[in-house]
Length: 78
Image (cartoon, rainbow, N blue to C red):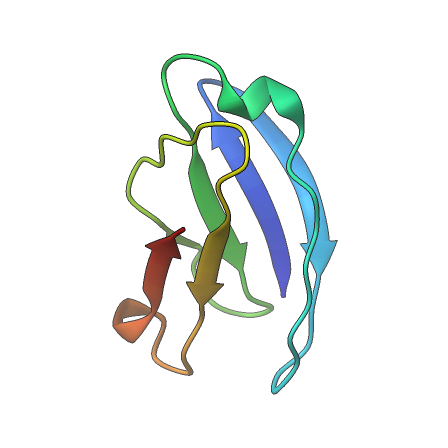
């Protein structure tokens, strides 16, 4: 599954991850400015799943837990 950050018309590739794995990636600083961004999970052979809009400040962390049924996924900001 590919994970992207979406902001306006821009789609920024963040990482590729497989099932039952945990990974992390630093977000580009440009995502911390202004109007927020969304995360998109793009699974092979299925339709993409998008988070709600995320607004971050420097030093905050986003945790996005993706479930097999993507609509049951959860997102936390710390």
